[in-house]
Each structure stands twice: as C-alpha cells, then as structure tokens.
Image (cartoon, rainbow, N blue to C red; front, side, top):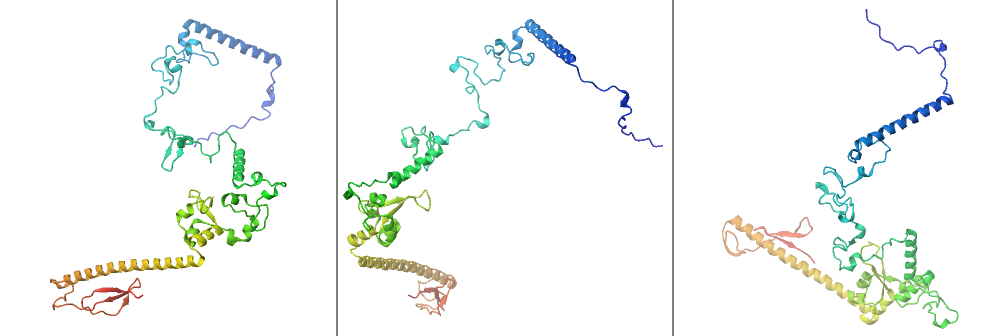
Length: 379
C-alpha cells in the first residue's frame, strides 16, 4: 500500500489556546531590574578588559594589531606612534616625520605601471594658439600665453555681472544709451546735425568712423547714398584694389563680425557715397569711364580664356598626330618619315570624312585612309 503524503498540520484552534494564560506586558519593576543587570554586565566586561590590558602591556595594542581593542575604546599614544613602523606596513606616509617638513601622503606613493606615462593637464591655464595648447611653463617669456583673454569671463564676476559688463561695453562702442553724447541748450551752434534733415539725433558711431553726420531715418530713406558695401562689392563693382580699401584715410570702413562663421575675419563695410565719390571723382573720372574700363577688362578676360583654350587645343592636336603615327607604324610594320603614305610611298594626303559629334559634343573628323582623328571647333 502506498504511504500517505505528509501534510501541514492545521493551525491550533481557538479551543486549544483557551486553556493557556494570555501574555502580560512587563511591569516597571521588571524593566528596571533588566536595565540594572545590563549595566552591571557592561561594567564587569570593562573591568576585565582593563586588567587584561595592564597584564599584556601597551605594546600589544599597536595600530597594526587592533583586533584586541574593543569597539569604542580610545587607543593609547604608543598604539598610534610611528617611531617603530614595521617594514611590511603598506602606508603612503613618510617614515621619517622630520623629512620634508612632516608627513606628506603623496610623496612616497608610486604610480602603477600602466599609468607611468599619464599626464594630467589643466586646460583652464592653457592658451589655444591654433597650433597647439600651450601653457606659461612651455614658454615663460611669452606674455601672450598667460595673458587674460578679454573675451572670457573673469573668475571674480558672476554670470549676471558679466552679462551686464558686456552690455555696457557694447553700448559704449556704439555710443548709445548712457554713453550717447549729450545735447546742450546753451551751445546750439556746436551741435552736429543731420546732413539731410538737420536733425540732432544723429548716429554717433557713423560720425566717429565715417565722419558722416546722418540720422537713422535718413539712412533708411536714402539707401542709394547711405547703404553699406562689403569689401568684395567695392572691389568688383567699382574696380578698387585691396591697398586702396585698406587705407582708412582714403576710405574709412566699419568692422562687423562675419555672419558666415565666427572664426572668419571681420567684415569691412564701406559707405556707398564715399566709395562712389572716390571711384567716380578721383580714380576713374566718371561713371562712364568706369563702365568702359569694366567692358575692357571683360574683353581681356574673354581673350585670355580663348588663348588658353587654343593653346590646349594645339597640345591636343600634337598628341593626336603622334598617336596616329604610332598606330600607322604598328599597322604597316615599316619605316618612313612622319606623314609618308604607308605601303605605296610618297606623301600621304588625308581624306577627311564627315564631321561627327562625340560624347562630349565636339565635332570629330576621321581620315578615310589612315584613320587619324581631328577635333573640329566652330567659332
């Protein structure tokens, strides 16, 4: 007969527990007696540890053997003294307290083998010279390496103070806001007025750079005179040279950050009427003379382009003739001079076929007898 499987006994019923006395809480006297017994046991343990310490001596309680010291006990001076440090102790401190002015934890620590070539750099003390990051230690006599950058935020200023400083510097450069020159009621004859509408509210930045007293309203009203030209426009449209454009006494210019990329050079902006006055009045004489010079340069450019194309074509013809001669020598297997008819003797005269355009759209003629190909161009 199969054995019965063991089953979990049922929980005791309420009738079974009815005969047992219920658990009662501890009385205050019992709690007091338990606490007194705990304190007595702790005092006896401390007394035994003190007697054991006196018997064994203080040498057995050094820092290298702290297993006999109970938790919470203060170590003696002999236990933490470094006068008798064993040679096997792995401690990064110097064994000689008088060496290097006392304990120096990092002096005697040697790096691991994999990190012997590791060098830590502080990029906040380096200068990007566009050819490498250098510090003042690399070249101590170069003041530019460790000179503070005016565009960087100083360490003693907060971000809000730096933003306010940048705003004030921008207003000072543009002579706007609190840095705009004041207007006096007493000395009206000394005021600079707009050259178009005689207004007192002129652009002081333009007056300082270009020497032109003009208000913002008139700048927008007369763009044919007061618009700004870039250096490329002044060079290509008015045929001015770079030395003329870089001469600030001849043509003053206003510098602005390059909109294409921040690392590019600043833009040089010129006032249109000043550029026209110099180009029409001093350099070319008139607008018609400028147009004639522009047309002459266009003709010269076209002529140089055609001459270059013809020289390339001559080189191509020479190369084609040499290739044809080599093909004819290879086909006939005989000697002879260049241009001689193969096999029959005498001078060979080409018999050209019809002009056929190749894949590049250039007309090509082929000799019926020798197979020489010549490109044909129509002007």
